[in-house]
Length: 397
Image (cartoon, rainbow, N blue to C red; front, side, top):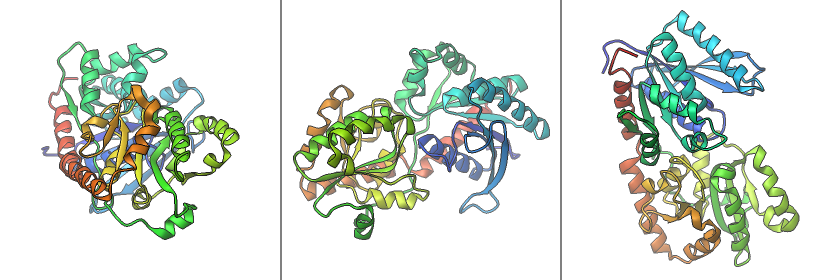
């Protein structure tokens, strides 16, 4: 694609080992870009360092000889404006030392805004990547609609994780700039069907007679925390069940669990929260324990967790938020429930738990086949190459 090795700066709010889908997708994309022959440096914010302090590490990519990613982490200030101004100072220093050829803003705000602002200030092209509910958050009050539209209008190129997000971006922009859809991907060698590990079940405290309802990721309001809790209570009135949260409950949303603990302590005790799992293979092992995987999101992009559960041939019930319907074909590779009907989530769970083993297997196999066809690492890598060509298609910024 390019005769010389271009230098790309990727700005992201989170990067592994931070939690959440943004961190995981940013890490995966940085590695894929580096393996395509681009020299990649990452700027990520963190609360693990004192405000304004910088840490730089070089990460060797697994399975890629001589391929590395340089990661700069900057400690966040309490105020976002301080953090962004200090970030600009750091970017100016990095660019003077070894100029970048382009910038990738992973998530529209604040990373995408900063990518476009800095790119225009130094005369290099910037692309922005819409990932989750970043468009929705900035479109409606108290979101910063002016900053959102400024970023989209002035970005050199735009990518989105789903066609749903791309459609929203086209509504908001006044030019005919194309929006390239780059769906998330799954490593099918890691996420695959398997027999539930009885020793793991025992270590987690899952009882033999319990139906295992699963959720993976950072559980919070936008992911459907409240309808998930209500549905879990409803299911437990009919049959023994536990809710396996493969990940964590976001700190500011943990207060939602307090009433459950006071009103229904037995149900609260059957919520099993693993905490952050470092290894993707561990995540897969936990997914294989589930009888039904749940994703009752109010808003979403195209969640990795759904694709990973599909790759493990799990039976899935999800809302129709964001790009989820682009992954799940209702009744064939999983089941969808309209967001307006999430109050009926518990009833839908109980209905799906009556499916026969053969029906579950057929749907699970269709789910994995769909991921293999549409959400493979190879397909994402090819899309990323095209996005780089978009980024450097014109020399004028």
